[in-house]
Length: 274
Image (cartoon, rainbow, N blue to C red; front, side, top):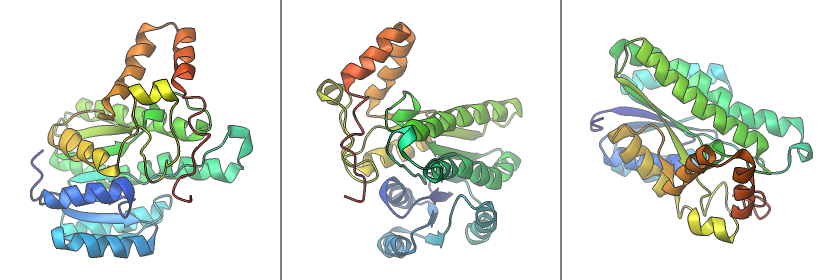
């Protein structure tokens, strides 16, 4: 996709991956609307990003469909149309499945999965009408393997991958090959939401920590949007999860994950609230 002159929505765009992605999009000549729940972070993001191009910001709880549908109309008025949707807003609550209250798991599902249904439904029909557009959904390395302490988070990210691939097939069935879909699969990032989480020594050699959010933003903008790649993974060695799963007997693969330190990778996690 040629990005200059396009318009984009970035959910959860005031911090982390969303902010880094918004910055890259603006530098490519894209008009950007940021949705985020954090009003203070939104204003800070607007102040920092306005020098790079035209940016709109709106406070939005993406789990509230009425807000999403209302702000979708606002975005179409402010930007004329929406060519790109980056579903980046995410939530993580670490801990074993039985340790956390229902509300934590409900919020995880609401932000990481259900919210995508609302935003995609808000913009996909007009993309179909024009037979052009690109929806990028943020999955995770945990969308390719099970991770202790991330059971519900991993479940949502597996679902995001399946949702995206199914929508791609639906678009092709409709003859709408101009509408593209991608998932992005980040490993543990050294700062931000997953700060503190890390694989064991063998795992860190093969799948090192992602050093910053811009690494993922670059994958979104350069690999997914510009080159049309279906599921960029960072680091790229995350692809080994799929290769080894296909080649190894299930029992061997599960033991391989334990050797890599996946089972204990969330024990050191503390996230943004250090």
